[in-house]
Image (cartoon, rainbow, N blue to C red; front, side, top):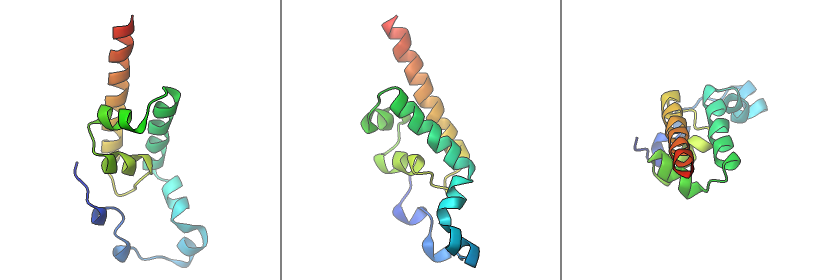
Length: 100
C-alpha cells in the first residue's frame, strides 16, 4: 500500500452539507468502521508499550501509511486496517513465544 498526500481525503472532491459543517467530519470519522480499527491499533500499541517505530516495523508500512491508519483515514479500505492488526498480533505472539 503506497499512499501519497493527495490520496488522503481529497478535499476538492468533498461536498459539505450544512450538517457536515455543524457536526464536522470528525463525527463521520468517529462513526466509521475505520475508526474502530484505528482504536484497536492504538490499544495494541499502548497496551504493549510499543513505539511508533515498533508499529511501523511490525506492520511493514511506511510511517505515513501507518499514521494514516492510526488517524482513522476513512479513504483506506477496512481490509488494510485488519491486515495491520493481524501483523501486529502475529508479531506479538512470536515475541511471546520466544520469551517462554
